[in-house]
Image (tube, rainbow, N blue to C red; front, side, top):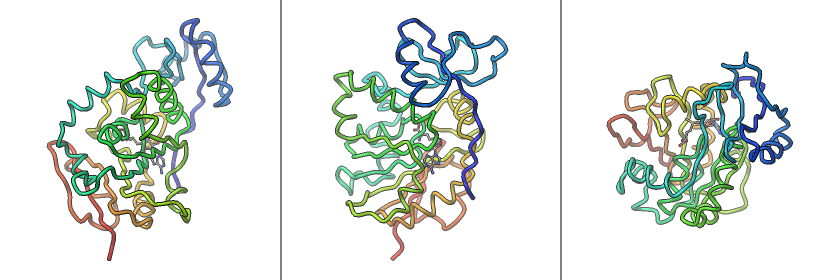
Length: 262
Ligand SMILES: C[S@@+](CC[C@H](N)C(=O)[O-])C[C@H]1O[C@@H](n2cnc3c(N)ncnc32)[C@H](O)[C@@H]1O
């Protein structure tokens, strides 16, 4: 099944005068119109806003904060606290067995999981097919480079690709392969994830439901990495196709792990 991505007519709105230059740059790069004031009728219309130099996705003129990506020292501490040192994700990608594994995060989203994996010392290539979400990630990378605590992690361990991971996985490769392919496709409305409920709602408006997740899993397994890891809500069925070799289960989420067929 081909990806079904909602059609979105976005504009870019610099909220404060200092954000105008950055908004103009993103407007040119993404080919989106720049607006000084979004029309009042656009309360429920998605908009890319630049607020104090940060690119965010918001609903219309609402003054609530939007969704954005962040790779700062502050964010590092929050996600380390949430995941804990011997967290489920570390076990799922096999951190004890593989030292500094190379990971392809095929569903980068707002980059929480990619960033956590990079903090753990993994080399992470993050793929995001929505150009708008990829723009949020790129903006967060730029801001993160100026944070002395995260600069090295980002420069040395995280690479961002604004592209569909399936295309990459299906290309014959001449360079060395990644060890782990990690997938966290969107799921039904109540999915527990690294993202808050508001973040998930807004994200769903931009990227849809990832109904083509079975195609992605198939491409990931055909690439034959040492592991494919799929994040699921704890009670959700496995992604259509073969059963995983084992699962690592927490209270709200589960990681299904697929090993290569012999
Ligand atoms: C639930 S979010 C991932 C959240 C992410 N794990 C995080 O920590 O922020 C799923 C994301 O995967 C992206 N996605 C789904 N299929 C993809 C594919 N084949 N290639 C690249 N990105 C994909 C969607 O656009 C969406 O942004």
